[in-house]
Image (tube, rainbow, N blue to C red):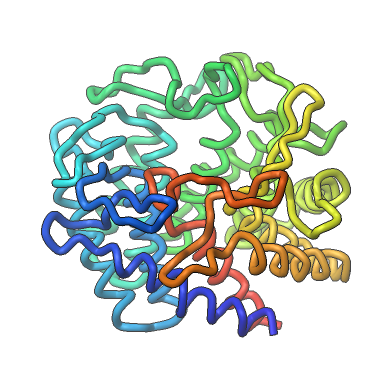
Length: 389
């Protein structure tokens, strides 16, 4: 039943919504749909969002083999290659205007990781050598410019010419972080997907380094939470628990282990402990997962991507442990999501979030940070994983 409902959600609601945003004039997808479902054809187009769109339709084609998904992936790759790549200084831009012209030329390692993620997925379905070359050039860029050998951490923000600058784009909660958990988990994600597309020893070694960084630097064994923002010496800058990132990290870490065929009891324990910890600490009686906790104060907003990643993370924990509790959590989360997060309006998608009082947050349905990736991936992961049982 869950698999059938998720298949319907993906193919009848989510993907048709994004297919409808195809920009035939300037390329890519339209960059904004407001809360009332009005499309702004002259809105900016985010670099991260574009990479996530490329991943979405490439993955959807790989799993479901529907021609319209491949056509959209081809359309997105052309826009990505022609407009998003900085052909002079390398890497992808942070933001384009609606015509595909650079608007914010800053570079961020997080954004490069998503570009690599999207390209590696597109290569998996096309086997196009040009795509692989682009992906490998981004990998080399991340490693040569983005990794700090001194503190064994990936850097964050740069200007267009790759001079390091303050990490404004991926810092929140009143701090400017030199190192973030978020960038590290998504480099891990991108490298894992690149390894699936193009396995090699060097990449395996880098993934093993990333696993070690997560276990030794980011994961807090005493609390079983992940640190979020760090200074240059890996000291935590704020008492913050990000529940969605933690449960997302648990399954991304496990995906890396499975892809590399690594069996490490310490890593496996970390993955399971994170899942149990989030289940114990942040799941609500209505089945949802709340957003975060800062300095002991919980944010009870139910964010769309947090529910999506929790469903994958808890299903992964069920596969890892066989504990029925995790499967029950997935079903409860899906019931909550279906009844609250999924927009019931014709041609709607998913709301950004649900407020503590149960009302949808009045926020754009599409913007540079609201794309097709989290909920499409949840659906695809469930479809693939349930086929294996």
